[in-house]
Image (cartoon, rainbow, N blue to C red; front, side):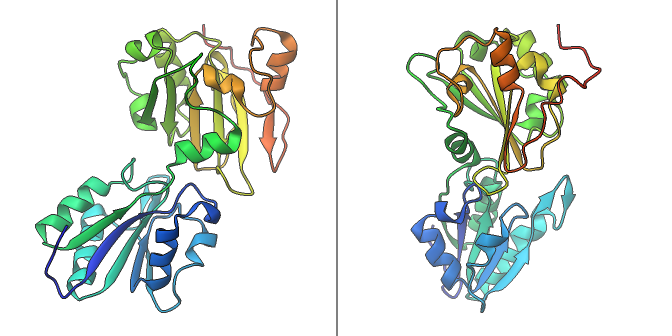
Length: 278
């Protein structure tokens, strides 16, 4: 969009899922030349180190519901900085157009007649799936991919069409609402033994992956945030598992109840007092 405020401009930039090597060339160039960078809390320190030392840098994100700054204040800050002639990078984890509130910020910039540009990044679903070796689509398994947010998944969504289509569901920010999510999936018609993967801190050195099934989602250990939940038959193709094996056997169930990553932990399933969903 074209603006007329002293040649200032705002770039809505995706920082990718965590690994600095997954930044786009354009994102890296902008970080090195920006006058000001307003970043989300989930942007990793290794990426923040790439910002020009001459730039103004401010954390405007939130984590676990605690907000550093309200969205209206972020909008005002972007407009004010750009209107003063600065090149502003609004740096967001993943891709700015997927659960990044870019739509609200674009509206605010348009109203203020501020020029802006969107620089896409690798969204967390793609980065996490790649890091865990999970194909989100597969011509023999799933041709439908659904991205949703955790708070929506824990409510009462109408997922019957996705169950019928054998879709792959990716839940961003699932929190710890696994009982509610599992209940909604089963009510929609997903099989209880549908495989799932929870991926924590995807593409970083501390990434952890826990594979389970819908019926056992309530038994999963608490992994460090941010996490992402992948649901669907494609999870059977994850790294470390043989494609085509049936999840019903005892050996495979044990194998899928293992946490993999930098801090290997026992499967926590045998110590749980909770009953599986029925």
